[in-house]
Length: 195
Image (tube, rainbow, N blue to C red; front, side, top):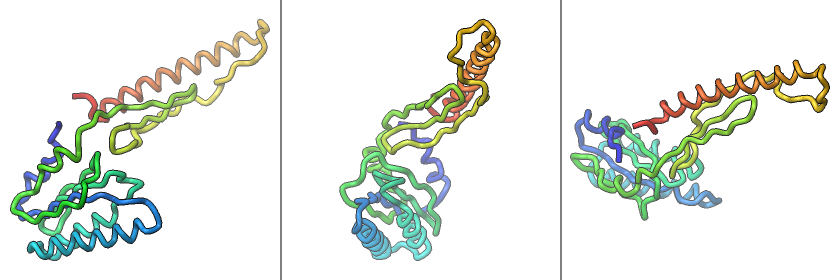
């Protein structure tokens, strides 16, 4: 498991608010249940002694969580009135985990953020490609490339006089394939799949 994403937590002093929060269901009553769960989390933080600014920062971060964007939920680490780090989870917690302590609570992160393998998916056609990173937390856009748009279609005729047009089409395909390969390599390098 790569832990370099936790570096922002090492630069700040506590105390820390740590909240592991699932988005709940995406139905008619789901929004109301999420609102009530956010209130419960904030009340718990206040009861444990969290300052008002940190509780407000956590409230805003949790309110922004939706089942569509974060299907398994998020963990939020806040201190001094700021959300220092928020991470997607690969599995939702059984119930919200709320903690106000001198240090951030990282142990549940090992289980809930499981570093499931990511893969880079390329949707390719003769005019370009779209790239997506896929993992347990859902797909994420990883860029696209657009090659030459014309000519890309061969003619139905096999007449000798059409040969020059057929060659232009094949040259366009080869040019676009080269651009796609370069963009795919760049997307791979920037995706942090390279170790």
